[in-house]
Length: 343
Ligand SMILES: [Zn+2]
Image 1: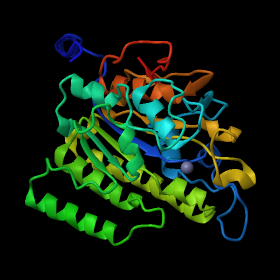
Image 2: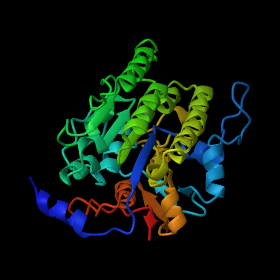
Image 3: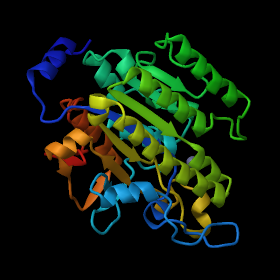
Image 4: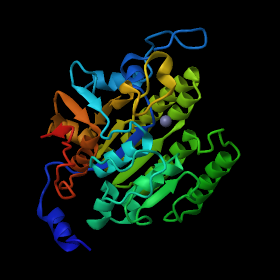
């Protein structure tokens, strides 16, 4: 136990300028090209070039409700926080906030450094408030350095047992039945089911921190199925809007909830769009969006941090600042991230 009582005291001693709930969403392997520029690849089987793939998010940005980072013009470029441009290293960088070169692939063992989940548990947040719903089972190895302390629903995990309400239980079981009868060729849970389970949990338990990790986009990318990849992106845009509608009907909890959306890596250019990794330069470039809570927007206490460049290492400080937590983890040469929002 490392300074837990002290750290807990610190949380209550400090009155942070901002404090709220956060929904963190990652969309696996969504290129900045589509995020900013819409449909890229022309051809009979795809939609018109330039057609927006995140139209609802863009209209929120125009309304000042979403802050977008990484377009390379109004804001600097957004880069991955590791040397691999692969999924697991990317998730580790975002969740730990620490640069490392130890995990270079998707088969690394469980993360051995403190993540934001560990930090929240160590500060006394109950497990029901520290939650992760992921489509990909591999991500389970990047969530917490001491596995089993948070509420997690990773791929084939059962719906978290904190749910006791019979109606909630039967709804979760219905979703899980659909999932097991509808496994895609890549074997993971389809995002539609991950999303439904996370939404159910959000409605019933109103957690302080909910992480929703979606995967279909990357799988369709590797399969070189551009139309299905763009379909996934449009679905994500719709789901983010659906979550915002849900929050709008949840009273004070909803008004106090911010959303952060990003990706774990980019992909190649042109014909190389299906792949990504160390040898594919454009897969190191990504993007991020912050949707500050209605309360933060109305109080005007935060604004987007303008910079020449951003990195995945900024994600953990961003989540912490929106949650109102003091920056956790010892500062070090490898923890150089800065929150994307500032007072
Ligand atoms: Zn991939």
